Every structure is written in C-alpha cells, then in structure tokens.
Image 1 (cartoon, rainbow, N blue to C red):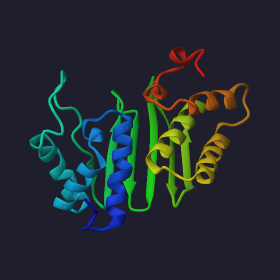
Image 2 (cartoon, rainbow, N blue to C red):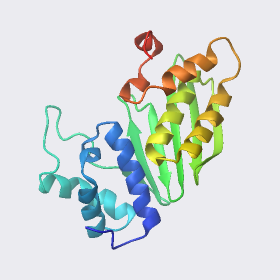
Image 3 (cartoon, rainbow, N blue to C red):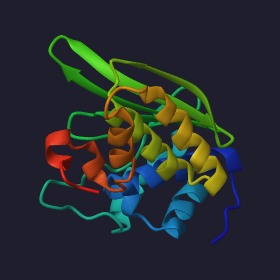
Length: 200
C-alpha cells in the first residue's frame, strides 16, 4: 500500500508518534507500517486518524485484549494540529508532535515542586530548550526520546545529543550521568538512578 491521501507532513506526525508508541509498548505502537498507512488512508487527517485508529485496529484484530485490557489504542489530538503521546505510569513523558516539530518533556513531581526538562526539534535541529531543577538524566531522557521519534541522520543525532548534554553543566558526575542514561535505549531509561546503578 502506498500513501495516497492527506498531507505528507501530517502523516509524518503520525509516524513520529507511532515510533514513540512502539518504544513505549503502547498497543497501537505495535501496528505494522502498512497497517498504519491503511488507517491513515481511511481517515487522512490528524483528528480523523486519532478518532478512527482505536476502533478500526481492534475491529481488524490488530490489537487484542491483554491481561490489562486493550492498552493505549492511539495518540490524542490537540488543536491546532498537534498529536500527544503520553508515556509512563505517572505520565512522566509528554510528546507534542506537530508538522515539522517535535517537543518532548520529561517531568517528575517530588515534594511540592515539579522538575522538568523540555526540548523541541525542527528540521533535525534543537530549536528550543528549557527546564526547572532538571537532572542530567532528565536531559538524557529527552535527548534519547527525540532520537526515537525523529530518526535523524547521524549528524543531526549528534547535534541533538550535544545540545542537550550542554544543558547539564559541569558539576561533578553530571556529564557521566547524562552519558549513562543516554546510552540506554529501552524503557529502563525512565527508571530512577538506584535502578540504573552499575549499568552501561
């Protein structure tokens, strides 16, 4: 099947969201690329895709009920033209995906404060970064998830990694913590440092 309908930029949003959903083991992230195209061609718009994919994928038998139900069946749509993918039991990660732009935020609530790290990539380059009380591992998490969503060239990937690595500062062990977390590629990247000790 070939992509025949809708805007390529919008379909590319769906693909970036799907990559993150696959990484996070969301049910709809386990669809094959041709299945993704099939749903897109039936509802070739961001809000149409979000509304259509859950029921269609279940009806076609592409998503089956598991021990905890059907899982996450699709991305959310937020106007204007933004797909939302939330990841983690405490929703630590929020990806906002627009045509030509991906923003990833990692946040963690502790005590009465919320720490976060957030970065935006457009055309393979980091175009915005901000955070509050962010740990080096938080910047590494954001960097790794941007690479998963974007699938950049090697040169672009290095630029993304370096831009976010530069946010951690020169404190003792900060660069090493960033590198340790950035080297992780699976969902263990969301684990706390007490779980990651000795890895990599």
